Image (cartoon, rainbow, N blue to C red; front, side):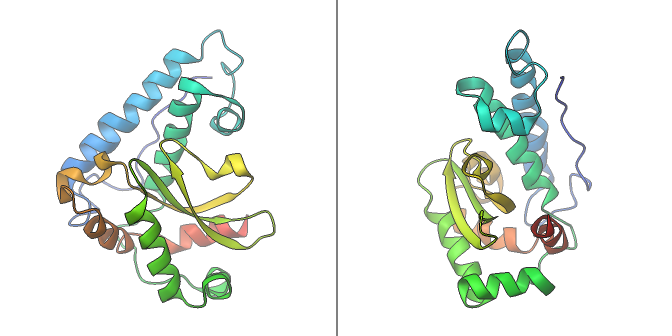
Length: 193
């Protein structure tokens, strides 16, 4: 199976001013594309030659896992944004957030803290656990919650390449902008699965 770079669901400048066209060109156009290219170069002749990204995440190790998970993580990250995003979730997802965290404000603070304090490179995630309850988890490097049996709903990429062109070392400012772009209807759709 040849993996491909998915098309962005919006134009490269659509997330400005929070994520610049230049960042999209590098982060999506170079970093994400390189993970796809490397994965396609690693899988021929292996047990993962015809595997889906999800199978790779669950079963692979080393370079195949790292590149496959990064392809999946980045695609999921981009699909979680909308140029008309932001605001707050509605309906069942909001109820689940309030049940798990006490309020949307507390959830947002906890998630922002998880994203800001992750040491080094990685991801902050809102996930639904095996019991159907919401949790915030951090994963280092290419880590992915699917490996722990969790269903990802939302993620924030805190690798430096996600924000350095726009924010330099000011990761908390990037996270503030992240909230202005979240596609809550997409997260709610993922929650219902």
